[in-house]
Image: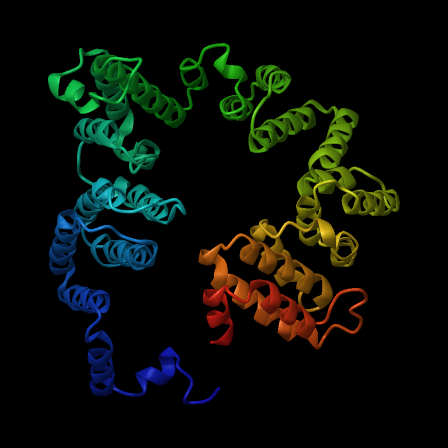
Length: 476
C-alpha cells in the first residue's frame, strides 16, 4: 500500500506537531469539529472533565430553539452519536453512576430536539434507542437502589412524549431487582388510579372534541400503565400477567396476537398459542406486515405440533400470495432431492408472472434469480413503476454489473417518474441514475427495441427541457 494513502498508520508517521496543525486547520470555522476536539481534550484529562463538557453540550441543546432541517439533522445525529460514544467509552468504564446520569439526561433531551425537527426517517429515535442500549449494558453496575430507580422510571415514562424511554424497564431490570419491579408495579397502579391533577388537566385542554381533558388524562394514564405492567410481566416471565392487559377481542388483533402467542410458545404452552393465533388469523384484517407476523407464528406452531403436510401447504400458499422468500426456502427444505429443484423452477416461473411487478422484481433479486429478474424487467418494461424507487434502486444496483439493460430500464423508469411529477427533491437521484445509465450503455450488447442512451437523453431534453434544476445537476 502506498505511503501516501490516507490511513491511520500513515498519518501516525506525520508526528504529533504536524497532526496538530492539520487538526487546527480542519476545525477552524467548523463548530461541530471544534466541539469534538474539545471533548477529546477533556477525555484526555479524565472522565469527570469530559462529563462536565457533555453536560454543557446538553444545556446548549436544551436552550436551542431554531428549526433543524434535514440537512442540519444529519449533523445533529452525528453529534449526538459522538456524545454517546464518549459516554460509553470514556465515562462508563470508570464511573457507571455518572454515565447512567448522563444517559438519562441525554434521553430527556428528546422533547427539545423532536419539537424542532421532523424525525420521519427515525434517525433521532435510533440514537435514543442506542442510549437505552448503553443503559442496559451499564445498569447492573449502578449503585442506585431499585425503589428509587422505579420512582424515576415511572416519572420518565409518564412524561415521555416521543417514546424516548421505550424499553427502559427491560434495560434496567437487573438494577431494579424484584423489589424494584414490585415497587414499580405498585406505584404505577396508584398513579393510574389517582384523580387527575389540575396541571395534568390543563396540559390536555383543547386536545379533544368528544372527550374532556380529564377523560384524556385518565385514558393516557391507563395506556401508560398497560405498557409498564406488560414490560414488568415480560421481565418476570409472567405470561398470564402480560395477557391480562388485553380483552378477549384484543387478543385477536394482528398487532397483539403474535406477541402473545410467541410468549406462550416460549413458556411451552403450545396449544394456547395455537388457539390465539388461529383466532387472530380468522379475523385478520389490515396491513400485510401484520399478516406476515401472524403467519410466522402460525408456521412455528404447526412445526412444533409436527403437522408437516399442513405446514408445507401453508408455506406454498403464502409464497403464491406474497412471494415470501423465507416461505419458499422453508417449503423447498421439506422436499427430497431433485423434487426441490423442480419446485424451485416452478416458483421462479410463477414469480415472473406475478401481478405486482415490483414485488416480483424484489423477490427475484433477493432469491437470487438475476436472469429471471432481467427477463421480467425487459418483457414487462411498460409496467415498471418509477415511483417504486426503493425496489428499483436496489434491483438496478444488484443487476447493473451483469444485466445492464435491465438495470438501465429500471433507472430510466425512475428518471421519467421524477421528471413527470416535477419531484425536485429527487432530481439529484435522477441525475445520478442518468449517469449510471450512460456508464452501463457500453456494456449493453443488444438494445433490442430499447433506445440507446444518446437517443434517450435527446427524448428527455425534448420533453423535459425546462426542468432546469435537473439539467444543472446533470451537467455538474
